[in-house]
Length: 80
Image (cartoon, rainbow, N blue to C red; front, top):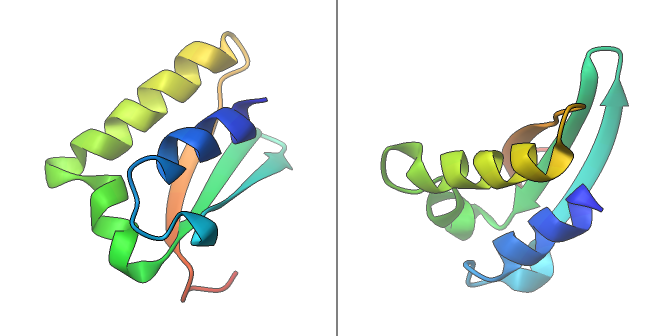
């Protein structure tokens, strides 16, 4: 549910919504939502001084509740 909500929010602000992919990785320390966007959209997703990225993280942490989740933003050129 968190991945779908975050993907919907990110698609709303980028110029290349078809390139947005959100993957939910389960690690020992908890859940990580990895957001991949087009390289031209990375600045929009991070925002000035990281404000947009912080807002996304705030929304996700509110939706996640106690379990919590980390959000990591990556451009589509970076593979990993």
